[in-house]
Image 1 (tube, rainbow, N blue to C red):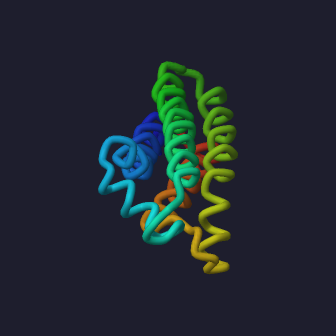
Image 2: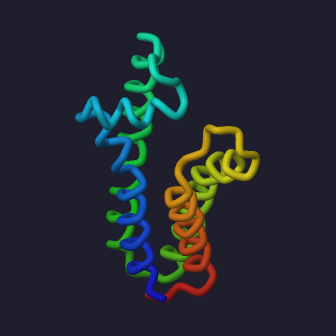
Length: 135
């Protein structure tokens, strides 16, 4: 599989994973729905502030990583692209580990199952690209 195809696929999947968080920044009803699972029916003002800050920081960080993936497609050397694939797989692996552990332990803090699956799939694609990806 071509590494640039992997980068594009992972960028799209990651954006889909990020979409609920971004929607919560602009839609109060959507934010309330996301917060209901963790904070209950009536979250405190501090919880609302914490969630807004969390969504902004994590959202901008992940958008930055998506742009790094897109920018990495300008490289032509296979060895460099494979190395980048490996480095990105490490980052995406650390992003999906907390959700996977929370899902397995059923502690109530896990992301929805489709988000967990998309994270593992992205990690696997990047790891595959680092071993067998082509230009």
